[in-house]
Image (cartoon, helix red, strand yellow):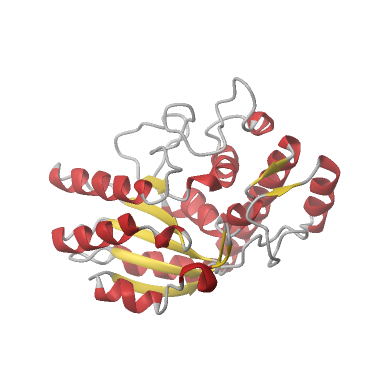
Length: 273
C-alpha cells in the first residue's frame, strides 16, 4: 500500500469518526466506544477493499459486509454516508422518529446495509449463510463480517466458527474487534476469552492478529485472507474502545455515553476536522 493511499484512507477514517461523533452528539447519546474502535477497518473496506456501488446498493456483484455487533450502526452509517450511499444530513436523524437510520443496523431501512443485526451472535451466522449461499451459486462475491469481543461470549459465535470450517466456507473474511471492553466491564473480568487467536486456529480458521488502527497492517491481513481457498479467515484486531474520540478513548464505561453537540464539536476539533 503506497503512502498516497494510506494518507487518503487515514483522512477517510478521520471523516468517518467526525461524522459518527456528530450524529451521536446530535441525538444526545449512543454507543460511541464500539463505534470508534471499528472506524479504521470500515474506512479500509468501504474506500478500498470492497466492491460496492453506492448508486445501486443491491448490486449483484457487490461484496457483502455484516456488522454483527449491530450497536455500532452509527459508525457504519457514517462510513456509508462518506461513500455516498445516502446524504450526510441523514446522519442527523439517527434513531429519531421516521428515520432510516435506527440505532442498530437494519437492512430494510438503510441503503447499503446487507444484514440486520443487534441480537449478538446472529449477524455472524447470517454472514456465514450468505457466504455459503454465494459459494453454492458459484458466485465470486466476498463476505466480510465484524464481531465484537464481548459478542464472542455468545455460543452462537462458536457454533458458526465450527460450521464454517467444517463446510470449507473460504469466501469470508471476519474481524474481531478486540478492544478488551464490553457493556459490563473488561472482557477479562466478565468472561475471559483466553488465547483468542489459538481458539480460532483450533476451530480451523486461518487466523491473523493486527493492530486494528494500522491501515497498512489491516490491508496486508485482508490481502492474505483473500488467498485462502480452503479455510475461513479471522483477523483479530487489537483496538482501543473509543479510539479518536477525546472524551471516550480508552476509559472505563465508554460503551454507551451521553454527550451534547458542544462536546461533539470539541471532539471533532481535536481530530483536526
